[in-house]
Length: 235
Ligand SMILES: Cc1cc2nc3c(=O)[nH]c(=O)nc-3n(C[C@H](O)[C@H](O)[C@H](O)COP(=O)(O)OP(=O)(O)OC[C@H]3O[C@@H](n4cnc5c(N)ncnc54)[C@H](O)[C@@H]3O)c2cc1C
Image 1 (cartoon, rainbow, N blue to C red):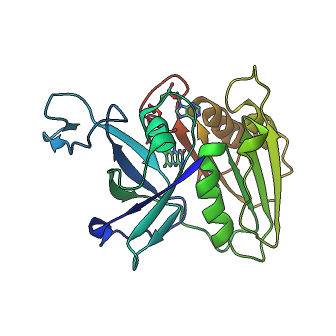
Image 2: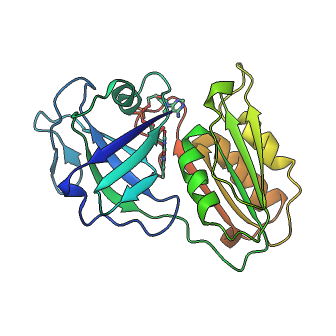
Protein backbone atom coordinates (compact mmCIF):
# COMPACT_ATOMS: atom_id res chain seq x y z
CA UNK A 1 0.00 0.00 0.00
CA UNK A 2 1.32 3.45 -0.83
CA UNK A 3 0.05 6.80 0.36
CA UNK A 4 -0.59 9.34 -2.38
CA UNK A 5 -1.05 12.96 -1.31
CA UNK A 6 -3.05 14.98 -3.82
CA UNK A 7 -3.01 18.74 -3.56
CA UNK A 8 -4.25 21.79 -5.37
CA UNK A 9 -6.84 24.58 -5.38
CA UNK A 10 -9.41 22.39 -7.10
CA UNK A 11 -9.82 20.50 -3.81
CA UNK A 12 -11.58 23.57 -2.36
CA UNK A 13 -15.20 22.67 -1.73
CA UNK A 14 -14.60 18.95 -1.21
CA UNK A 15 -16.10 17.93 2.12
CA UNK A 16 -16.33 14.47 3.58
CA UNK A 17 -18.72 14.02 6.49
CA UNK A 18 -18.72 10.34 7.39
CA UNK A 19 -15.90 7.79 7.64
CA UNK A 20 -15.53 5.10 4.95
CA UNK A 21 -16.72 7.43 2.20
CA UNK A 22 -15.26 7.32 -1.30
CA UNK A 23 -13.84 9.43 -4.08
CA UNK A 24 -13.30 8.59 -7.73
CA UNK A 25 -9.70 8.95 -8.87
CA UNK A 26 -8.87 9.62 -12.50
CA UNK A 27 -5.36 8.58 -13.50
CA UNK A 28 -3.64 8.66 -16.90
CA UNK A 29 -4.21 5.61 -19.03
CA UNK A 30 -1.67 4.17 -19.76
CA UNK A 31 -0.28 5.04 -16.29
CA UNK A 32 2.81 6.78 -17.73
CA UNK A 33 0.77 8.92 -20.17
CA UNK A 34 -0.73 12.40 -19.90
CA UNK A 35 -3.83 13.02 -17.81
CA UNK A 36 -6.78 13.72 -20.11
CA UNK A 37 -10.06 14.90 -18.57
CA UNK A 38 -12.99 12.98 -20.10
CA UNK A 39 -16.26 14.45 -21.36
CA UNK A 40 -19.70 13.49 -20.08
CA UNK A 41 -21.86 12.35 -23.02
CA UNK A 42 -25.06 12.28 -20.96
CA UNK A 43 -24.58 8.63 -20.19
CA UNK A 44 -20.94 8.05 -19.32
CA UNK A 45 -17.54 9.70 -19.22
CA UNK A 46 -15.49 9.12 -22.39
CA UNK A 47 -12.06 10.26 -23.52
CA UNK A 48 -11.83 12.21 -26.80
CA UNK A 49 -10.61 9.04 -28.57
CA UNK A 50 -13.72 7.13 -27.39
CA UNK A 51 -11.92 5.08 -24.73
CA UNK A 52 -13.26 4.78 -21.18
CA UNK A 53 -11.18 6.81 -18.71
CA UNK A 54 -9.28 5.07 -15.90
CA UNK A 55 -11.57 5.96 -12.98
CA UNK A 56 -11.18 4.02 -9.76
CA UNK A 57 -12.73 4.34 -6.30
CA UNK A 58 -10.70 5.03 -3.14
CA UNK A 59 -11.28 6.06 0.46
CA UNK A 60 -10.46 9.70 1.21
CA UNK A 61 -8.14 8.71 4.08
CA UNK A 62 -7.25 12.28 5.17
CA UNK A 63 -8.70 15.50 3.84
CA UNK A 64 -7.18 18.79 4.98
CA UNK A 65 -9.56 21.49 3.82
CA UNK A 66 -7.15 24.28 4.88
CA UNK A 67 -4.01 22.94 3.24
CA UNK A 68 -6.13 21.52 0.38
CA UNK A 69 -4.58 18.09 0.59
CA UNK A 70 -6.16 14.69 0.18
CA UNK A 71 -4.41 11.43 1.11
CA UNK A 72 -5.35 8.16 -0.55
CA UNK A 73 -3.89 4.80 0.53
CA UNK A 74 -3.70 2.62 -2.56
CA UNK A 75 -3.04 -1.13 -2.50
CA UNK A 76 -0.27 -2.15 -4.90
CA UNK A 77 -1.53 -5.41 -6.35
CA UNK A 78 0.23 -5.79 -9.66
CA UNK A 79 -1.77 -5.12 -12.76
CA UNK A 80 -4.28 -2.31 -12.43
CA UNK A 81 -4.03 1.20 -13.86
CA UNK A 82 -4.46 2.86 -10.46
CA UNK A 83 -2.10 0.45 -8.72
CA UNK A 84 0.56 0.87 -11.44
CA UNK A 85 0.13 4.64 -11.44
CA UNK A 86 0.42 4.86 -7.63
CA UNK A 87 3.52 2.64 -7.61
CA UNK A 88 5.41 4.92 -9.97
CA UNK A 89 3.83 8.34 -9.24
CA UNK A 90 6.23 11.21 -8.66
CA UNK A 91 5.79 14.64 -7.12
CA UNK A 92 4.06 16.85 -9.67
CA UNK A 93 2.27 14.05 -11.53
CA UNK A 94 -1.32 14.91 -12.31
CA UNK A 95 -4.51 13.09 -11.31
CA UNK A 96 -8.09 14.21 -10.71
CA UNK A 97 -10.73 13.35 -8.13
CA UNK A 98 -14.49 13.67 -7.90
CA UNK A 99 -16.82 12.96 -5.01
CA UNK A 100 -17.42 12.25 -2.29
CA UNK A 101 -19.56 9.12 -2.34
CA UNK A 102 -21.57 7.98 0.67
CA UNK A 103 -19.80 7.04 3.87
CA UNK A 104 -20.90 5.07 6.93
CA UNK A 105 -23.34 6.78 9.29
CA UNK A 106 -22.37 5.46 12.72
CA UNK A 107 -25.24 4.36 14.93
CA UNK A 108 -24.08 5.73 18.28
CA UNK A 109 -26.75 3.69 20.10
CA UNK A 110 -25.28 0.36 18.97
CA UNK A 111 -23.98 -1.95 21.71
CA UNK A 112 -20.89 -3.03 19.78
CA UNK A 113 -19.29 -3.05 16.35
CA UNK A 114 -17.76 -5.70 14.11
CA UNK A 115 -15.46 -4.48 11.34
CA UNK A 116 -14.10 -6.75 8.62
CA UNK A 117 -12.16 -6.22 5.45
CA UNK A 118 -9.15 -6.92 3.28
CA UNK A 119 -6.25 -4.60 2.46
CA UNK A 120 -8.45 -2.27 0.37
CA UNK A 121 -10.61 -1.71 3.45
CA UNK A 122 -7.70 -0.70 5.71
CA UNK A 123 -8.15 3.06 5.06
CA UNK A 124 -11.86 2.85 5.86
CA UNK A 125 -11.32 0.63 8.91
CA UNK A 126 -8.67 3.07 10.15
CA UNK A 127 -11.17 5.92 9.90
CA UNK A 128 -13.85 3.89 11.64
CA UNK A 129 -11.47 3.14 14.52
CA UNK A 130 -10.83 6.87 14.81
CA UNK A 131 -14.56 7.64 14.88
CA UNK A 132 -16.46 4.84 16.66
CA UNK A 133 -17.61 5.57 20.24
CA UNK A 134 -14.68 4.81 22.57
CA UNK A 135 -16.83 3.02 25.15
CA UNK A 136 -18.19 0.37 22.79
CA UNK A 137 -16.44 -2.96 22.06
CA UNK A 138 -15.11 -3.24 18.51
CA UNK A 139 -14.02 -6.53 16.95
CA UNK A 140 -11.84 -6.10 13.87
CA UNK A 141 -10.95 -8.89 11.43
CA UNK A 142 -8.60 -8.13 8.56
CA UNK A 143 -7.42 -10.43 5.79
CA UNK A 144 -3.98 -9.77 4.34
CA UNK A 145 -2.33 -11.49 1.39
CA UNK A 146 1.18 -11.34 2.89
CA UNK A 147 2.73 -10.40 6.23
CA UNK A 148 4.08 -7.04 4.97
CA UNK A 149 0.55 -5.81 4.31
CA UNK A 150 -0.01 -5.40 8.04
CA UNK A 151 -0.01 -1.71 8.99
CA UNK A 152 -0.31 0.10 12.32
CA UNK A 153 -3.95 0.97 12.98
CA UNK A 154 -5.28 3.90 15.00
CA UNK A 155 -5.87 3.02 18.63
CA UNK A 156 -9.36 2.47 20.01
CA UNK A 157 -9.54 1.61 23.72
CA UNK A 158 -12.07 -1.18 23.29
CA UNK A 159 -10.94 -2.65 19.96
CA UNK A 160 -9.53 -6.14 19.48
CA UNK A 161 -7.84 -6.52 16.10
CA UNK A 162 -7.19 -9.92 14.48
CA UNK A 163 -5.08 -10.27 11.34
CA UNK A 164 -5.63 -13.27 9.08
CA UNK A 165 -3.04 -14.12 6.46
CA UNK A 166 -4.62 -15.83 3.48
CA UNK A 167 -3.06 -19.04 2.18
CA UNK A 168 -1.32 -18.51 -1.19
CA UNK A 169 -3.68 -20.92 -2.93
CA UNK A 170 -6.91 -19.64 -1.36
CA UNK A 171 -9.25 -17.30 -3.23
CA UNK A 172 -9.28 -13.67 -2.02
CA UNK A 173 -11.54 -13.20 0.96
CA UNK A 174 -11.49 -16.84 2.05
CA UNK A 175 -9.80 -16.13 5.39
CA UNK A 176 -12.12 -13.18 6.02
CA UNK A 177 -15.21 -15.28 5.36
CA UNK A 178 -13.97 -17.90 7.85
CA UNK A 179 -13.10 -15.27 10.45
CA UNK A 180 -16.48 -13.54 10.29
CA UNK A 181 -18.28 -16.89 10.41
CA UNK A 182 -16.55 -17.79 13.67
CA UNK A 183 -17.05 -14.46 15.46
CA UNK A 184 -18.94 -14.45 18.73
CA UNK A 185 -21.21 -11.53 17.95
CA UNK A 186 -22.50 -9.27 20.71
CA UNK A 187 -26.29 -8.87 20.34
CA UNK A 188 -27.28 -5.58 18.69
CA UNK A 189 -23.79 -5.15 17.19
CA UNK A 190 -23.47 -3.23 13.96
CA UNK A 191 -21.43 -4.93 11.25
CA UNK A 192 -19.35 -3.18 8.58
CA UNK A 193 -17.48 -5.33 6.03
CA UNK A 194 -15.76 -4.50 2.73
CA UNK A 195 -13.51 -6.41 0.37
CA UNK A 196 -13.55 -8.66 -2.68
CA UNK A 197 -17.07 -8.81 -4.15
CA UNK A 198 -17.63 -12.59 -4.18
CA UNK A 199 -16.22 -12.97 -0.67
CA UNK A 200 -18.32 -10.21 0.84
CA UNK A 201 -21.37 -11.64 -0.90
CA UNK A 202 -20.74 -14.88 1.05
CA UNK A 203 -20.40 -12.80 4.23
CA UNK A 204 -23.64 -10.93 3.51
CA UNK A 205 -25.47 -14.23 3.04
CA UNK A 206 -23.99 -15.59 6.28
CA UNK A 207 -24.98 -12.51 8.28
CA UNK A 208 -28.51 -12.24 6.92
CA UNK A 209 -29.47 -15.88 6.44
CA UNK A 210 -27.50 -17.82 9.04
CA UNK A 211 -27.18 -15.24 11.81
CA UNK A 212 -30.48 -13.65 10.84
CA UNK A 213 -29.19 -10.14 11.48
CA UNK A 214 -31.55 -7.37 10.42
CA UNK A 215 -30.34 -5.77 7.19
CA UNK A 216 -30.28 -2.40 8.98
CA UNK A 217 -27.48 -3.68 11.25
CA UNK A 218 -25.21 -4.69 8.38
CA UNK A 219 -23.19 -2.75 5.83
CA UNK A 220 -21.40 -5.04 3.38
CA UNK A 221 -19.63 -3.51 0.38
CA UNK A 222 -17.85 -5.05 -2.57
CA UNK A 223 -14.69 -2.97 -3.07
CA UNK A 224 -13.18 -4.91 -5.99
CA UNK A 225 -13.97 -7.95 -8.08
CA UNK A 226 -11.46 -10.71 -8.71
CA UNK A 227 -10.62 -10.80 -12.44
CA UNK A 228 -12.49 -7.61 -13.32
CA UNK A 229 -10.84 -4.24 -13.95
CA UNK A 230 -12.62 -1.14 -12.73
CA UNK A 231 -13.58 -2.20 -9.20
CA UNK A 232 -16.69 -3.91 -7.91
CA UNK A 233 -20.02 -3.68 -9.72
CA UNK A 234 -21.73 -1.92 -6.82
CA UNK A 235 -19.10 0.86 -6.66
C1 LIG B 1 -16.10 2.59 -1.68
C2 LIG B 1 -14.74 1.99 -2.09
C3 LIG B 1 -13.59 2.38 -1.41
C4 LIG B 1 -12.35 1.82 -1.77
N1 LIG B 1 -11.23 2.24 -1.09
C5 LIG B 1 -10.02 1.75 -1.45
C6 LIG B 1 -8.83 2.22 -0.80
O1 LIG B 1 -8.87 3.13 0.05
N2 LIG B 1 -7.64 1.68 -1.19
C7 LIG B 1 -7.57 0.71 -2.18
O2 LIG B 1 -6.45 0.26 -2.50
N3 LIG B 1 -8.67 0.27 -2.80
C8 LIG B 1 -9.89 0.77 -2.48
N4 LIG B 1 -11.01 0.33 -3.14
C9 LIG B 1 -10.86 -0.75 -4.14
C10 LIG B 1 -10.35 -0.24 -5.50
O3 LIG B 1 -11.32 0.63 -6.08
C11 LIG B 1 -10.15 -1.47 -6.44
O4 LIG B 1 -9.18 -2.35 -5.89
C12 LIG B 1 -9.76 -1.07 -7.86
O5 LIG B 1 -10.07 -2.16 -8.70
C13 LIG B 1 -8.27 -0.74 -8.02
O6 LIG B 1 -8.06 -0.29 -9.34
P1 LIG B 1 -6.80 -0.74 -10.22
O7 LIG B 1 -6.80 0.15 -11.40
O8 LIG B 1 -5.57 -0.81 -9.38
O9 LIG B 1 -7.14 -2.23 -10.68
P2 LIG B 1 -8.20 -2.63 -11.80
O10 LIG B 1 -7.77 -2.14 -13.13
O11 LIG B 1 -9.55 -2.23 -11.33
O12 LIG B 1 -8.13 -4.22 -11.78
C14 LIG B 1 -7.13 -4.95 -12.52
C15 LIG B 1 -7.06 -6.38 -11.99
O13 LIG B 1 -6.58 -6.34 -10.64
C16 LIG B 1 -7.50 -6.99 -9.77
N5 LIG B 1 -7.54 -6.21 -8.49
C17 LIG B 1 -8.13 -5.01 -8.28
N6 LIG B 1 -7.92 -4.62 -7.00
C18 LIG B 1 -7.20 -5.62 -6.41
C19 LIG B 1 -6.66 -5.81 -5.11
N7 LIG B 1 -6.80 -4.91 -4.13
N8 LIG B 1 -5.96 -6.94 -4.87
C20 LIG B 1 -5.76 -7.87 -5.82
N9 LIG B 1 -6.24 -7.74 -7.09
C21 LIG B 1 -6.95 -6.63 -7.37
C22 LIG B 1 -8.84 -6.98 -10.50
O14 LIG B 1 -9.61 -8.07 -10.11
C23 LIG B 1 -8.42 -7.08 -11.95
O15 LIG B 1 -8.21 -8.43 -12.32
C24 LIG B 1 -12.25 0.87 -2.82
C25 LIG B 1 -13.43 0.51 -3.52
C26 LIG B 1 -14.65 1.06 -3.16
C27 LIG B 1 -15.90 0.65 -3.93
